[in-house]
Image (tube, rainbow, N blue to C red; front, side, top):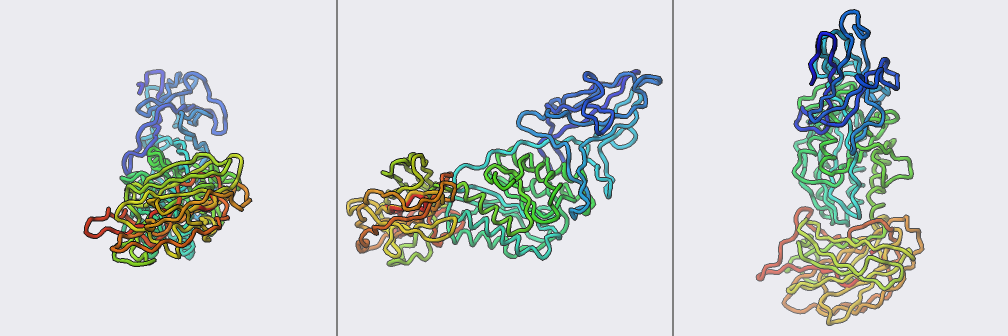
Length: 603
């Protein structure tokens, strides 16, 4: 920082980027600020001394000449603003933020600008100081809406959304008192998001905030990733917030900082809030009733820390408390692109009238990425079960391989093989590409493990579910007795998405006919369904009876062209952790993904 002289004054501004602690933000270099004669001016007073560039320490300093008595700038005040279009690469500026009552009424589009004191020679004026030589920093709240923390904010660019169907995501819920009687609707909207991810290779974490995080009304956050690939896993996750109650105050800063501090990596973070921030920091600073620059600035620094971990922030403002100008603040913590009704896959933030609409937008956001994909979920059932009983099924662990093939012209990206990992979902995903067709037939076959026997509920090697509608889709068993796994064929996904559950093949799997073109003619903008492979099989002393003859029908459900991980199973599996490998003494039964032929849209 330069020193003032007998004829000059120094005006210095601290510029911040990512939060580094509960009350600190690290420096940001490359931000260009200027000194303006009036708040509304568009050009600085001088193109040399009235412009500065923040350095590696986050300092942006102006050396103002002629401030001695009688000088041209003596006693003069200036407005500090960011020069248009000068955010560093990978960042964007927020020249206007929403301030005003926390209720959302009386919203103000407040220009992000600060006036210096009257300048005198041999003096330094700082954004982080109070008193006669300080400006920007203020601990006075109420209707002093421009009250700032003294650290200039810029927002990190939002990382790209996760590709394909399924994701590791965190859900951050606003439990402030203003949610009021809409709390059941908030939980229902969250249920809708969870349901949309069920049947895909997805895991979820859960956070809350009111004036703190976790909210003062709940015992803890749940940063660990919980598999929701099966219905049992999804139901267990929903129980984490089923009994949550409301607190008071709205602290975006601490909610986002809790996410940033978590050891897990989240591809996406869904922030669902009904109001603007009225608190910040880990000791609930702010007045709790109004939104000031400082409340929003701190939320930006924490959101930056989240995005620095390559996590995309999707902000949903719900209700009148965050309508209209409040989009400025949602933009500041997520990204510059608001939802306009057509840009579902690229929008950074959404503003909806109620939680039901928010839930639908979350549902659509998730499943749009699953169009044209097939998710496969593999589960293992205890060896003590018999027949079609899948009681106690859990997601398979690492090492179960599935092969997907097609003979339908116009579908590329196949053949392909995917193997389950130890992420606890027991699932894989296939994302074929549709070029000269919008439908077709895909065959998925599991590479069977020794010591396991396919379980075929209803005589099917796999079950297929349209993820968009939740309706079952027909599959056809295929394959020949010599095959190690019983395959099934399903219609290739068209504009919808499908999930399938699989289990180990019977001793004599059926033969697999060549795939046929799917009957669906829906557009490729619809969501694809993913086949559900039959439940896992378990080793049994006696060989299982041969499977029924192949079903000649194909799944007519459409599948979309968006990425969808793989066919997913939906047996009642444990939501956390993968099933252990079978032991020689009591090998678990598994439902390998037999060959299942289903229309690509719904497999």
